[in-house]
Image (cartoon, rainbow, N blue to C red; front, side, top):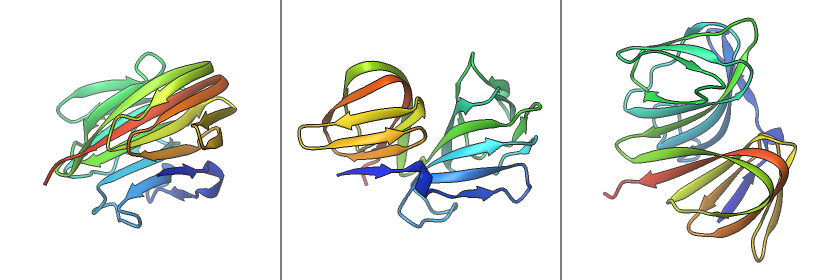
Length: 194
């Protein structure tokens, strides 16, 4: 099954501390709360410095999408700058994290998986023209991080995407991607056997 998630259909939720907002792209199981999801994909805009929420038992990956970036002080790991030089960062959800932003807000792609149930990998790919794309995990999410449009096609489907749209792929499939110039994030989610 393939599902297009148009960014235009999503709503941003302001943070309780007023420091930013999160737009949830997808969550499983559908309708799960922040304490009961197996996996969650979102886009967060950080506008002010402050602590991250703590998520026990969760593995997190952040990837810079827009803006100058953010400095993260991660308990037990040290200080990291999520920016052009280091655009992807992985850390444990239970760690205390303090984010420091400059004068401009930063927008980050956020992947979270409950480590007792599943794991994830995030890849980044630049596109120009046509290229092949094959899913390889239990569930794959493709996110258009940069670029005005992307066309995703198979033998029987042709789907157009615009910036910040996402697609969920369930099962093995081979697709053709076509874009003038684009950057995509590919999230592979693997479920643990019971």
